Amino acid sequence: MSQPNSSGSSPNPPSLRRGTPWILTAIGGVAMLILLVGLAVWLSGRDDEITTSSTPATTTLAPATTTLPASIPATTAPEVTTIPTTVPATTVPSTTVPVSTTAPQPPPTTAPAGPSGDSWSITSQYFPDHPFMLDRVAQVDRLSAYDGAIDVAPAGMRCVAIVSDGEGWSEWCAEPAQAANFVVLDGIDPWIVEVGADPGDVTLNRRDPSWIVPTNGCTVSMTTLIAAARVAPAVTTGIVCVPGEAFLSHSAVFLQPGPPDGGGILVNEGDEGWDSISRGTALDCDDLGDGVDRCALYGVEFDLFQAVRPVPPNAQLTAATDVVGMRNETATALSWIGAAEIGPAAVDALIVDELTDPEAELAPTVSRASGVGYEQLNLLIVEVPAFDDSILSITWAFWISASSPSTVVHAYAWETCARGLAGPDLCI
Image (cartoon, rainbow, N blue to C red; front, side, top):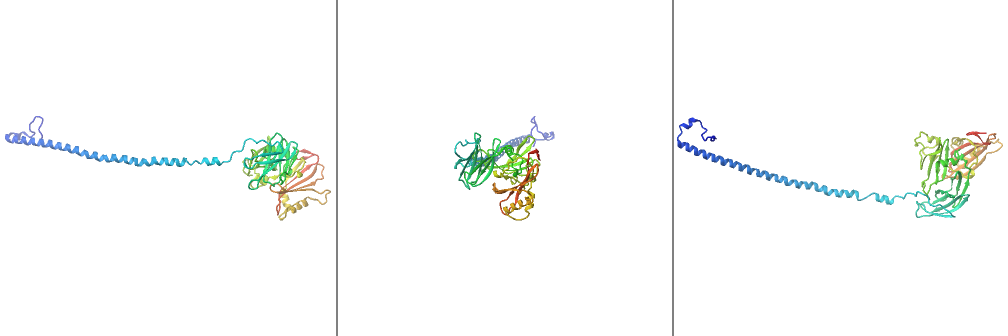
């Protein structure tokens, strides 16, 4: 629709203005005024519509703003309540409390005071409710033996303590009624201790520092081997030697700091003398990491404890140290027995027969010991005169199983020089 211009004249062309009466002009002006008022009213009506139409927009936004706070607590409230319930569940039942209350106490770092009289009362950390009462049962020079037992499940426990004046003690512990032989050092002097099955049956026997045990394949003194193994406060219960090495078993220790399970120690001869290279309650023969096949060297399947032999009785120990030609004769002895299933006495008879020359001027010297060591092996020693200017005799030692059928589990042979050694393996 046309509207007036800025000067107040009509926007229509001039041809229409000339012929128009004034009344029409007045009517037209009134009409124009009405139209202008209507337009103003219509425009104001549109402004009201815009204003009122924005009101629903604000009311529709309100539900959005009111639902957001409602959804936020709904999602965060479970998180707040579950965190406290899960944290106490993992921290309250501590697992360290039961362990600390039931774990065994560590052994003492120093030995208790030793005995000074005829009787000695001492409580082992492993048997706190059963004190030992040990009595002195033997004494030779500065060495004393104390023997005592306690009644604990399953079979009881017996301990023999070997006390050296002013230098502490070593000990052997095992089940009661068990006989054993072991070696203990007093300075450089080795002592054979023979323990009988009966309470108080303990005998002390001093040996020379150069004493060797050829019945177990050894040509090096026991003093050297035990000192290298550093066995104390345990005692040496068994040994086996191969060229340049030895494996020693030792006792359990209960009365002072020491190995409660016993064990074994491997020693060898290095550039600076003899020293220990491994120890434990089991030693795999192929697992020492130095490239040595000790399974073949010691003649065992998997563990060096299979090769160790007990300490022989004092009566069967040789005093000779001039020994040469030490060799393992186990295969030879087994060939004499063959496949026959016979008892220990028959095995002895076969061996003696093989080593006896009926035409010789002197018969072999034979000695036997039965039930030696924990394995209860028999030890047969046959000494054959050599009738040679330099060699006094050829000696054979056989470890024989006491069960039936029986067999030879180890055999050694060596020569004893008549006038001494001219070298490591040469008689004068």
